[in-house]
Image (cartoon, rainbow, N blue to C red; front, side, top):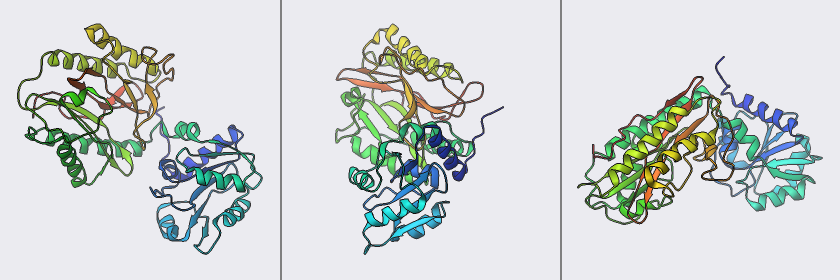
Length: 377
C-alpha cells in the first residue's frame, strides 16, 4: 500500500499530540516559523510580540496572540480557540491566564521550537514551572515524509525553477556581475508567481571554489565556470537546483573531465535511491566515484539534504567518509531530498550539479528537468 499521509492540518496536529504523549511531554509551544505554519496554516516572519501556537498533549490547541493578528489567524488557521491580548495588557499575566485555561499550568515537560527568541523562552519559564526542551526532532519526524499535496507544490516550484534556469542560462552573462545575475534570477522567479528562496548563489571563477559563497560584485569573464544555485517557493514549499555554466569562451584546463565525474557521481547516487536504502550509502557511492577519479579532498560537503518547508531538513546524505559514523537513517517513500555532488578546484573554479529527488514506493523520481550541460543554452 502506498504511503498517503493526510494534508489536513488538524490531523497533523493530532499526530503531534500523539508524539507528545509517547514522549511524556505535556505541551508543544511554537513561536513564528515553518513548524507553526505546518500545523495551523498561519505563517508570519515577524516575532516582535508574544504570539504562540500552544498544543497540549491532551485537549484542544489554542493561539495566544496580540489583537492585530486576530483576523489573519481567523483567515489562515484552523485553530478555533484564541487568547487575545491588547497593548494595554500585561502579556505575561495574560499568558499565565491562557495556559491555565488551556490546561497546561502544571505542565512538567514543554517543547519549544529552536527559532523562539530567548526573551520569550524566559517569559515562558516565568509562567510554567516545567522542564523545557526543543521540538526539533518531533516536528521533523512529522515533516520529513511529504503528502501528495506537499509534493504537488514542490513539483510546481521545481517547474518554475527549471524555466528560470533555462532562461538565465540563455543570457549573455559575460560582463554582468554576480550580483546582477542573482537579481535577474530572483526577478524572474517572482515574475512567474513564486517566492524567491532567499539564498540565491552565483559563484563565478575562483568564487566557485568556495561552497558558502553567495554572490558579489565580481564581473563574470570569458571562460568563467559559474555555479548558479537557486530555487523558489510555492505556498512555502521549496525547490532547489544547481547548474554550472561556462560563460563565453572555452572552459579552463581540467574542467570538462571534472564535470563529467560530477555528473557520473550524481547519476549513480540517484540510481541508488529507493525505500530502505541507508542515507550514508548514497553519499558513499557519490563520494567514491569522485575520489577514485583523482579528486579526493575536493568534495567539501554532503551529497544532499532533505527539502520541504525548510531548505535543509533530514535526511542528510552523509557517510563515514565525510563524517564519522554517517547517517544510518533508511530512506522512506515520501521523502524529498537533493542530490548535489561537487568538485572544487582550489582558488580556480567549482562544479556542483543538483536536482531534487522524490523517494517513491519502488525507487525515485527526479523533479527537475532543466538542461544539465555546462554550455550556454
